Length: 155
Image (cartoon, rainbow, N blue to C red; front, side, top):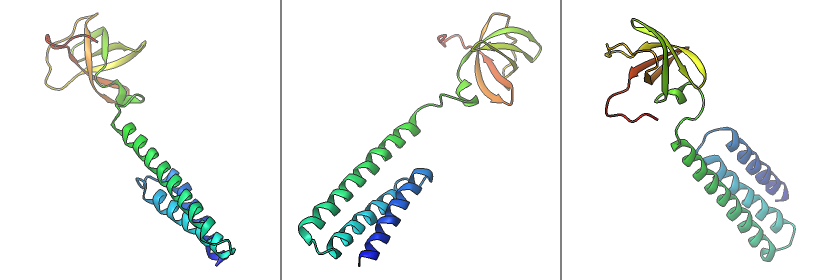
């Protein structure tokens, strides 16, 4: 019985570790916590200590583990709703300043960097030098921009 308890405890901890690296939305964490609690139960009951110690230890492991999974899951869901803050997609919606423009393409400054820019499909008006434009998309190192609408407030 002790070997089964150790096996359940080890597999439970292994599932919790795997949960940290694989997006299973808490399924492996819950299963690992329940297995770890069961393993603790089996170890204490097989050692002859009885229910006086096995029950509080197993329940303590289960409550703490499930609480940790719940808190972690809540934090993950909150983080998924946050806007993108890094990478190319974080540029979408930003303001850029036109440095030079010729026809459908030009050069804009965004965040202290110079970017190649093209006018977003459907917009035909050419922006002037020094005008603020809005980034609509990123493709490689080229930004798709559009002129700011009159009703939009500058950021």
